[in-house]
Amino acid sequence: MIDNSLAVDEDKLICEMWSTDLPRFKNESATFEQVPNAKKVPQDRTAMYAWARVTNNPRPLASARSRALLLVQPTNPEIRQQVAFKVQGFVARQSLNLGTLGNWSGKLPEAGWARQTLNLVEGQYPEPFNAQYRALSRLIDYCKQHLPADSWSTLHPKRLEMERPVFTKTSRRSTALPLSSTDDPFGQAAKVNKLWVVTERLQLGTQGKSSGKIVACDASSIRAGDFVEVTCVLDMATKGFSHKKVAIRLWMTRVIQLADRNNVRKVTTDDDLPTFNTMDDDFEWDKDDVEQL
Image 1 (tube, rainbow, N blue to C red):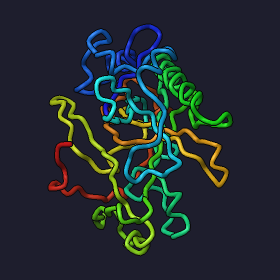
Image 2: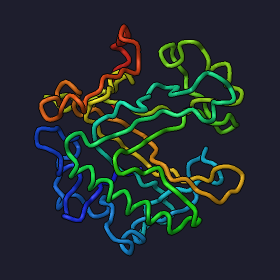
Image 3: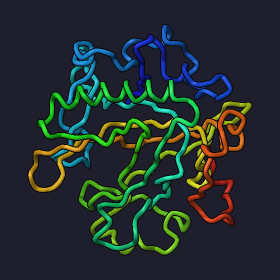
Image 4: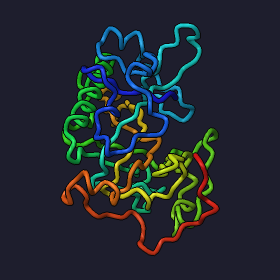
């Protein structure tokens, strides 16, 4: 996947519109003019059709009913790369659950519905957040043109709701990830691994304030009020047995904390910084597990 920058009508990148008091992702220091056109999400439908197409999801474990937005490769059509894009915002108090097993209750019938979840809000910066919403709306509207008429999306003007499935159905093609006691403290995932397994891990990281170095982190490091950058893809899959109605969702692949909530208090109000923690307060880091992404 190639990370793409969301461009807006004013010929700016979303990341250029946030306050200068907020840090930018270290690899996103380029201006609108410096970013190659192939890495910008187009603003009109004609250009978008030449840039990416909606087709069957090429991922090995994807459902046969799943669709994906793939980049057009004029010189080598055999290369199929899924469009990934970056969004930024403040972590909301609602639905923050980035633990490896997400919101799973531990019950077998609910494994297929288990999700890691994250919502982003504007803080006190409606301009870049609304521009981000408009850019995503154009992208989703383009996808809807190639899907059944009753397709719908989870895109909301006041918050960006993102999720990621926890489990994959066990099959000959699926390889289970080893889970630590921190990932699965009660060994619940091991009890359902004949039917459901965790095959991929959501990438979580934090950017050093002075060095700009990105290091891997645990879910407990991402807290409500943090300013983050999230890499997403559009998941387009039919739900239920009709095989017609398609839901379009923002699925996370990576979350990078650009500034923790204590460092952004000077540019937001206390009302924008709810307190919420995904792990117990007495959780201790294993320094050997922290490595560069």
